Image 1: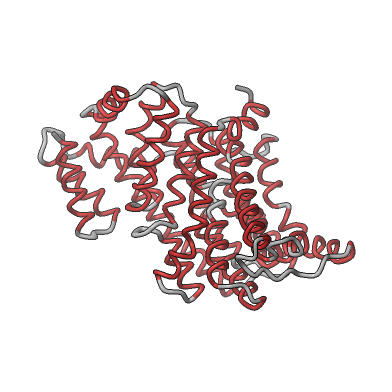
Image 2 (image 1 turned 90 degrees about the vertical axis):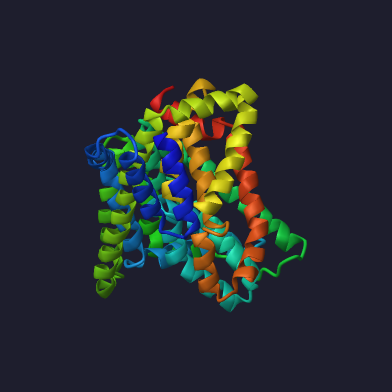
Length: 427
């Protein structure tokens, strides 16, 4: 009964365009008040949901992403990627993918990549004569790699909800992130080779220019490796890696003298606001999950779906379709937190590896940043490229198809996700 009341009011508030956090909180409150549950259980569940040691990583990763745009790291990563990839078919479009793959290893956020590195890439591609259509498509789609290559904010949230090792999830994201990048690079190569897009190339780099670019960007480029090896080597826990990312970003800014001190208060304030919002999501999602669990909703849904098919490959396809639709309607974080309690019993019964599923689920919902009406990433990219919503969506569609193809590859080849964690941490 409580679950039915909760869902009914959640949908009503969502249709009325009430902010998603309030949809979750108010509908949960109404559900508790109209049933036999004591009201104090809401406060207990909300407080318990946010009192988790691994969640301490979230504000650090958010701050690291904001600091990257205040310490000059983004421009140095762009310089390095241009010297490595700028002369290959696709030119700066290939550079965009490589630069985002490197940047992903520091920020852990798609929107941080888009708002920081994306600004530099869009300006450079515009000046070089690339079409707005290609510029928006590749910058937006390649920024989706941000939360997949570790560190990753969304992986931390998934791990906390499912009691999965954050370290295993971080390792599991490396090869899928690279796979997504390769798919995008191949598509850009195809567009250039067939003449569908004009992609001016930079001059072929000399050894001297490569070494110069490496010297100017060395500490920025190796940042992902430093953070990852610190985790694997046991120097820091995955939770502490967030703090390491912050200090390393600050350290690199000091070395190169690129810190924009006037931007630091803004970075700190944005980090506080974003962290507060994420914690509100987590708190309200915890009480929602508790209500669902009390009414045995996840088990009932699992039973219904399993009565249709017990083939895990068919079920993964059904789940992917469901999550892609959900990603159009909800923001990534609340969508992840709300659906985990429902889907977890299902994947457990089908013996789907929760680490592999974490990568699949996270990337699926991240794609929602491109798809309207919720597609926040699409709106940001439209604004940066000065394009209308219709033009931006049309430009993003081919790249959205490439991302969905990448999702299917990751879904049906679990070894891509599981090879590194099994190799380095055992099965």
